[in-house]
Every structure is written in structure tokens, then in C-alpha cells.
Image (cartoon, rainbow, N blue to C red; front, side):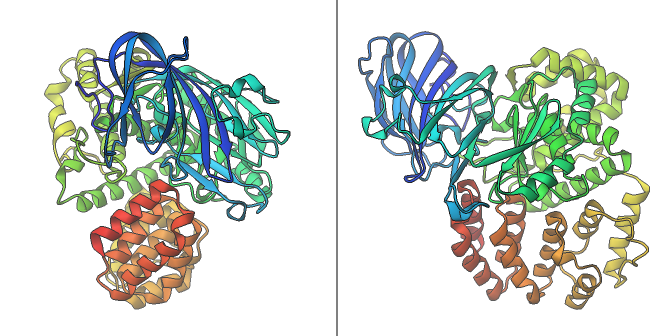
Amino acid sequence: MAPIDPHSFTDSTHPLTTHVSLSLYLSFPTSTIHASALLTLSSPFSGTLSIDSRSLSLSSILDPKTLSPLPHSLSPTPDPIRGTEISVVLSGQSQILIIYSTSPAASALQWLSPPQTFSKTHPYVYTQCQAIHARSIFPCQDTPARRIRYDVVMNIPASLSAVMSARHVRRRLPLPEEATHLDSSLCWCAEDRVVEEFVMEQPIPPYLFAFAVGELGFREVGPRTRVYAESADVEVLDAAEVEFAGAEEMIRQGEKLFGEYDWERFDLLVLPPSFPYGGMENPRMVFLTPTVIKGDASGGQVVAHELAHSWTGNLITNVNNEHFWLNEGFTTYAERRIVEVVQGADIATLNMGIGWRGLKDEMERFKDNLECTKLKNNQQGVDPDDVYSQVPYEKGFQFVLRIERQVGRTAFDEFLKKYIATFKFKSIDTDTFLDFLKANIPGIEKEINLELWTEGVGIPEDAYEPVSTIYTKIISLAEEFKQGKMPSEDEVAEWKGQEWELYLENLPKSCEPSQVIALDKRYRLAESKDYEVKVSFLQVAISSKCREYHGEVEKTLKTVGRMKYLRPLFNALAQSGGTEEKQLAKQVFAEARETYHPIAQGVVESILSKYI
């Protein structure tokens, strides 16, 4: 076997899957999908083909031309990270038909009962496939080294609607022949069911497969953009329409910087609060947490990041998660270039400053696991969800910025466009990028230590701490707080969420409780509707043993499921050294666990098992 990805059973000597046709019957009462997957290979194959799966119940594997069973076996014990290997014996076939069902505990899916939704009357389900969770929805070569096109026939309750990271073809009545291979008891053509058809005509890595089904409404915010949310949540729809009104301008700026936008639509779906990430760059349909809607358009920076992925990440993709910085470092750079044009240089610098602080915090987090501070790192036997961090984002950004600083912005912009045009719809590794860099910017390896940047630990000395008047002032005020001086109302009069976030992130990890209480009494930070501010403050409060804020911590952890907030708050409670804090962490997780996405559940369980 010649593996190409430490997180996949895929063998590099096997033909790649080029197309997947899915028939999906969504059963909300059982939180399962009954399905068939037709996998088309790049060429006929004779031998044993390896396919990734996780928690799938297989009914049969067939030759689609003859409908005869294909010999196959499953790995006897699921790998804790990779799941279960399906080994199918082929004799010259180029297609495989797999009939299966998902598990109610599928790691990519969160099923919400009506009481968990805004309307309280209809259920909801959504996916999160990054990094290695597509295999829990359909059997596939679940590695970004393999890009697929797909089409989907999705059978859902008629009271609901579906959106996907694909082009919507039509909504229609089900046809009996579509359910030929599925369990006859499913009632595919029941009166209360409809079919939604989708097609993805461009090759994407499996982790970008995405859908959501619920009672959805939308607002038009631009010629290429709608924003979707639960139709009953009019407040979120209205707020999102305002927050993301600048989407088309961002797309145009992205096109100026990086070339034509290749995905036709740039729609946005605001998910329920349990969504574990800030955003997910699914092509044509970006998924967003409601916490990015802040009322001051700053949530547009998350949209800018997901938009930038349309070029770096979705067009050019890391070959596996050991090279994740190729997705996120370039995208963070691209995001800040878009923000600089649309929202101004000061905002972009604040964004950079928050990232710099976050990068330094990650160095402390991984001081006993320095491999995780490298851009190109070894993830054999490592769950990518466990080591997810700001390193590929912020150290990756610093590396890209270092190249720009060396050659100048004009020359770098030309290089960037050529890079995107050369590798679009391809998956590459770090060495491929470095070879392209050296070929197109001769002598760059003499000016920048490329090996140190990509394979060295820590933050290189030639990294760039941002400089601006507002950034310097905020850092200075944070230093003064250590001496007991609180910022005056005049000094913070113009501050919005980002300024407060930067200030709080640069306070000591532990302060005098009376200082923390006085700061909150003056500026009401614990009550902020901006979760970046609220969570940054609550971290300081926990570390400073301000137990009067435990109620707000509990409320926050029971309200949102975004891992950006869960991870620091649970870490702060678990590592505080206090019995009361550790007990609170265990109690809150026990009570809130079922409201979190399976990925978030795993992350919190990992924190609690490590520290409690």
C-alpha cells in the first residue's frame, strides 16, 4: 500500500474517484440517511480498492452494470481516526454501487429536533465535513488529494427545503425508480416527501461536500449572493442582510487581486448557534455561525476569509492536512488584502494584530508539542481536529507576507495570480509550492530561509509584528492595565469589537479580581453581544478567579457551539487549578453536550480528559 494521506486509507497506486452520484433519503425521526452512492473511477481497475468510511451500515456493494455483488470486506476494528476501511475486489470495473445507511452519531452531521430550532416546529440537519468527516456521510476516498464532481438526489419532507455546496437543479416530486436499490419500507414517493436535485460540475475535495435541510428563508444581498437562515428567524435574516451587504464589493475586489471568481454563486447560510466554526468555505454556499453578525459589518471579515478560499483552498487545495497552511495561510493573507481595500488599512492591521496575539498564544499551547508549530508537520496518528489551531492561519500568513515584503506587492500580486492560474483545481504539497516559488522568483531562497519557515518550529525572527497608531495605542493601554490603570472613556470612545478584543487578548492571563470587576463595571464587557469581546473577557475573569462570572460563563457555553469559544473557556476552567472551576466545566458539558456538533463534542471531551 502507498498511502498519500495519514488520515485516509486511500492508496496512491489506485485510480482516483472522479464522480459520485448520491441518492439520499433523510429520515429525521431516526437521524439517519438511507442512501446509494455510485462511485466512478478514472479508469477500470482490477485488484482491491480501498475506500474510507466511518460508522456506515453497508447493505450491499454491487457492479452497477450487472447488479451482481462485488466481493468486499471491512477492517475488523475501526481506526480511531480514519474509521473503517472498505476493501472492494474489482475485476476491470470502473464503477461501484454502494447501498448503505449513516449512523445517528455520524461525525459530519448534526440533527436538531424541533425544540432546538428557532421555529420550534420543524427539524433541521446540517453537515460539517472538514477535515475528515465526509466519509461518515458517504463512502469515498476522503482525502483532499482526490477531487470529485458529484450529483445528488435528496428526498426530504415537503415542509422543508435544502441548500448545498452545488448548483440547485430543481425541486420536484419523487419518482419510484429512484429508490430501486433502497429499502422498500422507506416510502420514497410518500405524499409528504419531495426531491431536491443538485449538481457540482467542478472537481472539489470531499471535505467541501455540504448541505443543510430545514425551514429556510433568504434575502437577496447582491447579484451573486443570497443570505439564508431559518425562515422563522426574521431578526437574523434582517441583520444578516445588513451585515453582509458588502458581499458583491468583496467579490469584485477578490477578482481584481486573484482573477475570475469561478464558482458562479456566493451564497451564505447562517446556521443555528451549534455550528462549530466561524465559517466554512463550501463552494457556492458558505456556512456561517450567527455569532459573526455583530451589527457593525465587522462580521464581513469572516465572509472575506471564506470568500478568499474561493481561490486559495477551493481552487488550489492542500494535498492533505499536513500542508493545511497552503489553504489557510494564503487565505488569511487574501482575506486581509480584501479587508484592507473594503474596510480600510487600520481595520486590516487590527485584524493582523489579533492574529499575531493568537499566534503567540498557540506557541504557548504547543510548547510541549513543537511539531504543531511547524507549517509542514507530521500528523501520522494525529486527529486533525485535536491539533486544529491558528498556526497554519497566522504563521502561514506571516510566511506569505514575508515573501510579499521581500519582492514588493506589485511583483507578489503577479506571482499570486500566476500561482492560482497554474494550480487551479489541483491539490498540492509544500514542496510543490516551494519549487514554483523558486522557479518564478529566482534567488528567493537566498533572501528567505524557506526551510526554516516551513519546517522549523516557533515563530521565525523575520516575522512581522503589525505596526499602526491604533495598534500601538491599544497595546500600550493593555500594558498600563498591568500597573493598575484602566483606559478612560475618552480613550475607548471610538472602539468597536476588534479594538476591545485586541486589548483584552493582551492583558495578563491573571489579574487582580478587583481590577477585572472594575473594568467590567465600567464597560459591561461580560454582557457584550460581540462574542469575541465577551469570551476574551470571560477568559481573563476565569483566570483571575472572579467566580461571580461563572453564571455568564455557563450561559455562554450553553448558548453557542463555536469551538473558537468553547476551546478557550473550557481550557480556562479545566486548567484554573480550582475545584469549583473544574466542577463547573464537567457540569456544563454534561448538560450542553447534546447541543454541540459531534466535532465540538470530541474537542471538549479531549480537553476535559487531559486536565480533569
